[in-house]
Length: 317
Length: 261
Image (tube, rainbow over all chains, first blue to last red; front, side, top):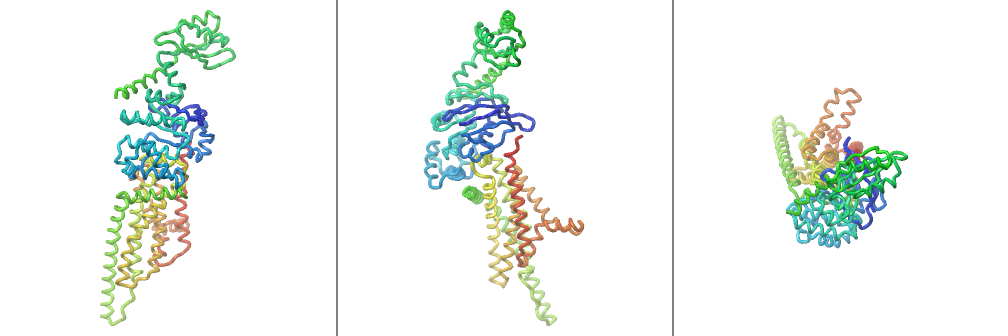
């Protein structure tokens, strides 16, 4: 449904996202997880044709976001981080306007309006001016606005930010119900939100994708692991098997092949164990050449910690 | 077309559902009413002295034309008031959307930038024409107590509509450049003032630049409308002027979708 290929975006000389690639299947709910300023909004803005990428391509429903932007925009419902509301209109009047510019047939507008207002639970405030609505209702009008033309794809940028805990639960419930029917990408910096609503998670930090997996697997991987990078001269399969069989190693992933015989791996170990000495000994004993061995900076761990601290704010609230 | 109308209705509603339209309308009517009163008073004073003088020298009273001596200066005064009123109408058109983030809704909806722009342009034009229409009461008064010529009044209004259309085109362009309404309004006033007075230095600017400056002066092209003449060359000038600034606006908005850095 959505395919993003090596997307890079610079603001001036500063990269906002670099080499971002991922795919989203039809009906899937994808979570975009990362600290603030990680590049979530930038990626979403490119997908919604708000701005172009510096490099790379993205297609939505088979249409290129740059070349067939009008077709893409027909298929996308978008809730930006600050819901785009004309505050001097009533909720109903605003949604009617959005329905018009999204190209809904005149005779269908009324039906769509009542359906969407019911879905977003804003029927009781339909005739009130948006500027008099509470933050939670404003957010829901924003969601209704994204749903109005029944888009195949929903892109929600931090849909629960600024809401109170009860509203957060309601919105999450709503998003969950929308999955299946719609393909959804939502961004958040709150970890439990992802595990509650999403089928798949992409963690993005400093403009780069650092992990992509199901929430369960990610949690397992993230909790209690440290990673090393090791580059060895020798047969790839054999090295991989040997390292895997070492005590305290949880996961070995192939990373790169610099030269004919030199291969690099990411080796994840249990928390608070430093296996560098053992690893080096193993390589030397086997008669391979140790080209490089360094800790991988625990980037995932750091992000995770960052995200879990945010989590406490919510669950404690 | 449908999209264009949707934008148009929303903008018009936003003008008239907020104090914007009424504040501008009130201020404008206050100033225009004052001008009308001042001009008609001095016109009456002049006709009175002229007829007394004629009686004194036992001559036929001079023919004094209310159109040329009262209405023409009145319309010229209106053009100056519009230099300040139109920027107040246009400053919010894009700047407000940029500030509040609603531009994100417009740019990610299946609607062309040109449709958005024309909808906004027409809405501002409608408010502008409302301002003009509100001055029609003065002419009704004149028709009750005098005999002005209708044709010249109508051509003057036609000229004012073309001129206001040009002002709005400048205003909408400036508004598309910034997210700050104050800046948009102020810069528009300065630019319109420049276009108004640019002809003044024409005599000193040499033959080529002189005629060029005179040509692009917005006010020069209004003059003949004010005298009751509809000349196609002035209409063509105003339409080209409007098209040029609307084109610039469109280029600037669209450029956000090309700039890859």
